Image (cartoon, rainbow, N blue to C red; front, side, top):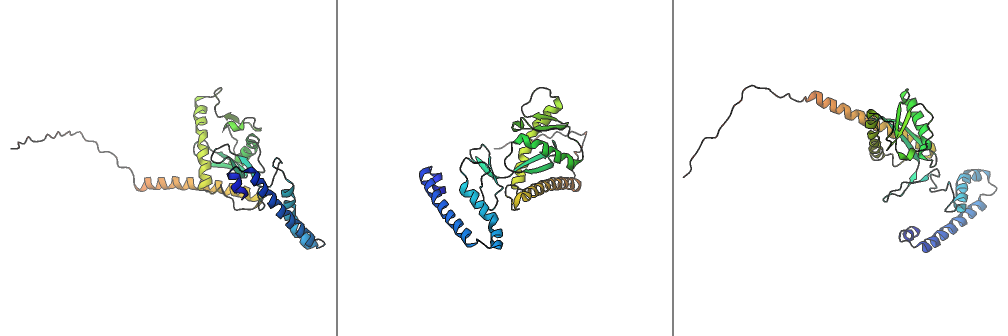
Length: 253
């Protein structure tokens, strides 16, 4: 009912239902606390869950680090700024890909909801560890202004005009290709739904989704190569003979 009232923008009724749910939860919490009092085994077993309930009962709408899910308390509310999906609840993941091939070099999950620019240094560090080489140029979108990157690579932000060579301009245009890569990782690689528990599960899920995306790209390239080997394109036959055919004149009565 609270969700229905919120959808109908009847917030006074919504708050009434939320207050009722809070009363139910408080009664159950106090009842369980009384029944397990003095039993060390049960107190240790219920300590984590009762601690989450205490935080849930005490939190207010404007608090930070709120609980959005009881089974996954590490979930954060991420504002997307889109009319269709204004908010998403999950973990923020930083993705780094190659400029031309689109291979994923890094997939780093971050705790909470940090600013995008403050995730660049860790993401590039992971990409350099995976590749074993240093990055020369890094292309990011405008959400990374004020980044924390401390490496030797030159960071170029989308929309930048000054100090760019012709090659840098071409590579900067390719930056938007990472959006399609992220979309494929969410839909084909199931990055949008994580079934692994905890913060370590978020990190493992991001790495597995990146590895699966790279394997799909490699398999598609091998399929194209195999088709080209087995079914080569026939070459056009050149001829110096030109034949001109003219239709015969016919008469009809």
